[in-house]
Length: 473
RNA sequence: CGGGGCGUGGCGCAGGUUGGUAGCGCGCCUGGUUUGGGACCAGGAGGCCGGAGGUUCAAGUCCUCUCGCCCCGACCA
Image (cartoon, rainbow, N blue to C red; front, side, top):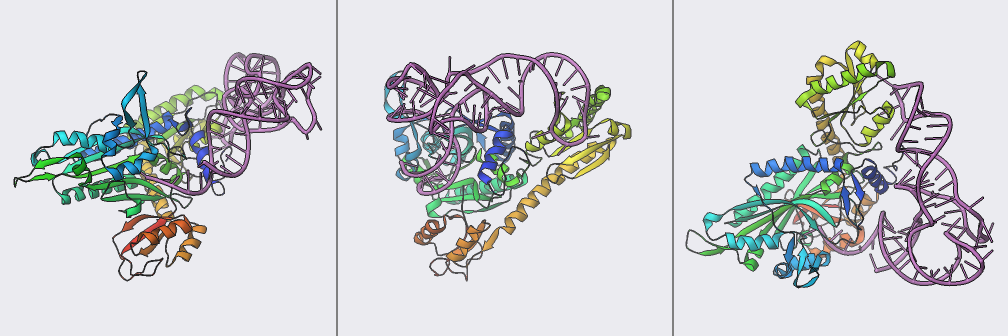
């Protein structure tokens, strides 16, 4: 493949090449910021729309809270403040005058939202509150990569308040399931869902759950998080309600989010030496029609291409590439780089035979089909591609997941192909820290199953948890 | 913050050691011929070399300062 670095030997450069050359993104004038170009924004719109449906279906509503957060709000919960302070951007001046109180550009919105919830919640009848917002946030990151870690990014953040601890925990897990299903079903990315260790949890949370995906370079990517905030925020922000028993109680809260980082995940899970490969359900363009139009037949071919596109109607998102200046070969590469799942070729030969040529992006497989069958064949093929992409990603993950018995095994596993290493863990932070220090790997998630009978891979004590370790983005 | 790399037409780069009329590829524009895996020919447009200062008859090139970007690491929800 011309113009993009070799994926096997130079993954980081390959990633950068793909996202720049497919015109998904460009570097912004400000360090660490990115411009999300129409093609990638189209993917984000699909992500947003599909997730939003799932949020609404589980009872949530959207709202919007301000970008600016007074410093005093952020300081109320000390663990939360300390977690975020190093990467907060502060506004100190406005309208040419110094502000009496600095304003944070939100790194996340718990503190403003809690302030409002304190006003809105009086009675158990006001609960639960189930609000989501689609917004941008800013975190002053030292080292950035487009989509994976940028100083400003787009995300959704859900913030809920509940009457009981059980209800909050159920909500936290419900959202984790929503995320897992969404990412697997729509993005064709298999994930491991589990709980974060104390060291890795959200600043201010009681418990953090996450879904973790494996990139094709063997590194993990946190693809979504769901936090059970307990009553920490309720207590410092004084969010109380009068319960049926006449007692004044603090609410139990959750917060959860996914971001434009998911787009980086799509690239790194499904991309190949030809560029991006998009799962059909998320692809802005599902089918591209490339007319092969030598001059004498040009009019006829373009007319047929338009007819075919039209005949697919609502069955698929179709684009006809009728640019005159480019040759078919150029267009094939162009759309493969952009990851369009299915290509249709129509030329004089096809018109004569009443057929079209179809080419799958995921496998490169080429087949011909009679024109009349397209309306049923194309949707079926798209679903087949969707399934095949998930299956491929899943078997890659399976092939790169190992049980390791000790830290040496973990180290050599990571030095080799990398991936998820599964092992027992005693629950002590010192053991977790030792692994990170020696191997660079962290606990991605803890899963409930099967710790019994295992020992901690570091200290050898009885394991309390089963952990997935990996190096992560 | 540490290490490395780099700023020269839109993009990618050469030129620098040895100062002497700023070049190549791609892209772009016009015309023509082409179109089943990144077309070809011809003719064009476009940069005073990141910025400031200095040395010199003369600076892309040498010196000083400065700004910025990328990668790796550290850090990081």
